[in-house]
Image (cartoon, rainbow, N blue to C red):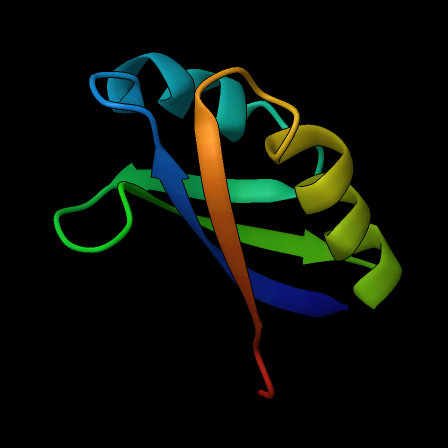
Length: 76
């Protein structure tokens, strides 16, 4: 099992609207609105790195209002 944390930057005023959509993406366990450089942090899980990256690039980045993502794979 691979766990990753995805930092998501959204367009102005879109964070609350996107939170539910991001939470519904395959592999996303939790998503939270945060203050700072990014607007939402999502915790994802997958069988392998490919599964995690597919969720991020294929689903999260395709959502209207998502302007940038950074993915951090957990080493634990």
